[in-house]
Image (cartoon, rainbow, N blue to C red; front, side, top):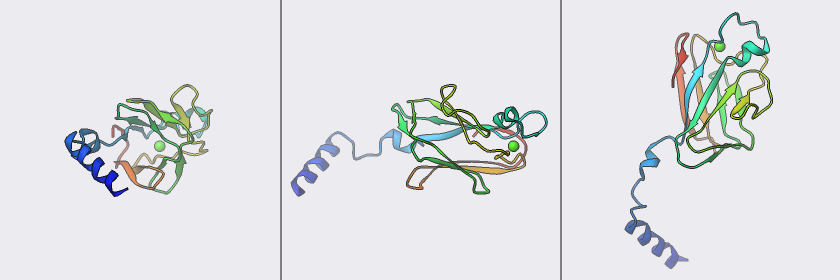
Length: 147
Ligand SMILES: [Ca+2]
């Protein structure tokens, strides 16, 4: 076993794998947009709730499985992804209201009966299944936030 590790270490050095690859410096998946203020009156209708949403984007050149990845607001409300895979360089949009997961393609639904993202300030936190923070997006006023 020890011999195998040594051999791998040497191989890694020779091919430069030991050095941090460019990809490691990049967040694999990050928030690229949070549409915090649903247009029109906040009447909690399905259409209005679903016009509030966030978007995450895969920065990598390979797909990323999102099973049990979660997104949390500052109040502790949590959305958890099911067994879905974010395509390489692809994006998913998660709407606040109800809908059929994955329909249309790339669209998911928090399933909430009320708004999630506070217009006047909030923080979105993306976590991997281990609980590691992968990205955060903060805002302090009514904006269409580009993260
Ligand atoms: Ca809102």
